[in-house]
Length: 295
Image 1 (cartoon, helix red, strand yellow):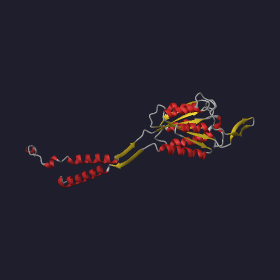
Image 2: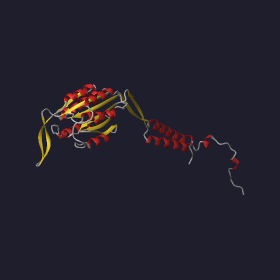
Image 3: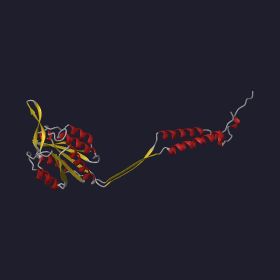
Image 4: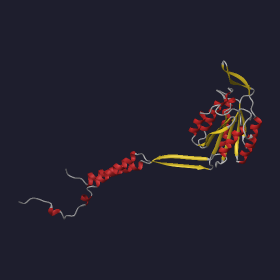
């Protein structure tokens, strides 16, 4: 019995249409891949940063003696000084900042760091009575110097804040200022306290009472320290005045930085979307015109 077969056609050469029969599937995979890339939303970033200096290293030397609890600044001198200092730190994002506290002695509360969140947390922990009472301005300045003397920063600054007279410590403040000058460290000094007397909390058998206390600040010494190191002396008699002082220091030192940052993002998905559309149109034309079949 004879039956039909394709054996006689096996040597027939394949046509171009036969060779391209799988091309539509390949085009579909290409279109799918392009759409996946589009959905990932590729972007390019153009960024430029020109820096002419290495930045500024700042150590803040803060007096935490008992007299800093006087309430001529609100709520008291210490808390007002901490708040303004933290605000100052928040505006120095490009700088390393450290904290030294001093009273009858001095120690480093936080070394130089760019992690300002940690520094602000350590500021919150500062309280009067942490160390022996007194006012060792020379030791406080010397401890701050120890943190800055090996610094590679172009500009090195100490902000020393106190409300008293140097009456303790092993190092003379004037000698510490000369050492600061030798290392090229500029010192800004701030005397905190109103003129005349200030209300000071005193423990009595009837509780804590506010009693007037004479304000004694060694302004000649603080002026000498600032002048020796090419810095500046300020007197803070109120919260507002203290804020203005830190703003002025901020402006004085910002001029030392020359940083230009330019950043721009550009969407890059459009070429892939257009390519997918082009392949899709080509697939339709190729499939329904060139590879047109009869059902």
